[in-house]
Length: 134
Length: 165
Image 1 (cartoon, rainbow over the protein chains, first blue to last red):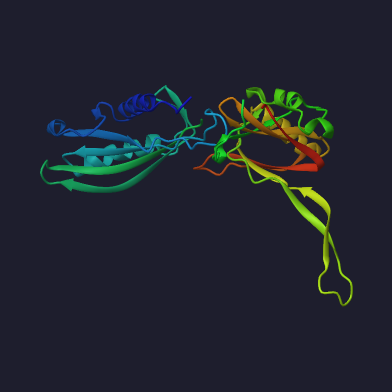
Image 2: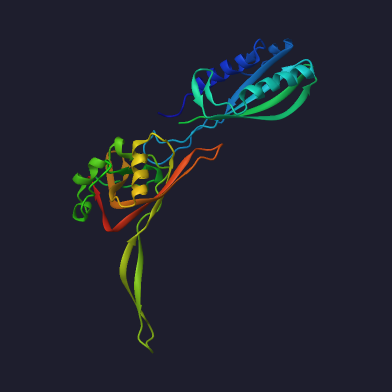
């Protein structure tokens, strides 16, 4: 096998985030059209990579991809509350993410909060690192 | 079929082990150049999925002789001890081969034949040696791959090269 499926990761992340912040909408990347909604989340998946070890192709290490998650809300309080929902549910999480694949741990790193003056949206940026067994 | 005529990157090398909880290691005479006896170990079921193959070979011990007043002394190799090889393997508690190595390390007395295979396409060069396992440890620090480390200590003179040419 070349690599765990990033498409499955994506489906699981979408499902997991949706269930955590429901009924707030969750999108796989930012699109300015979504900014009409008062509160929403976006996420991007990056650094999907299993280290390659010696010998046959199957010999690989664990995957530690990062899922960057942005929480948007028109009020600061809502923005913090939504981000806190994600942290409470997923920081240190172990189990079947989105019912699709097993994660040994999720490490949620609350990076910073900011304000988008063009869209009048508060924003909180989280980085989630997944430890995925090979 | 020719031997690989290339400069090979390290990651084409794989470590295989003789199966079974109570193995009878291959005799020295057979380790030396008998591909047909060694190569059956080189199958997926016997693979140890180590991160990398460390440097291996021999280290010389020698006697130094000198005559009082002479300009030069003399070095005579008296031993050729094979290197001990330390491996890192992802720790999988149900990996049958890893459990055999753990058992060997626990025993300390089990000799087993191991094979390092250098492969390019269908061409194989095999380095086979008899060794005991030791220093088996597990590091399960969070935020990283849980790893076990073990060292294979080859028995003196019990190694040999062979190939499928």
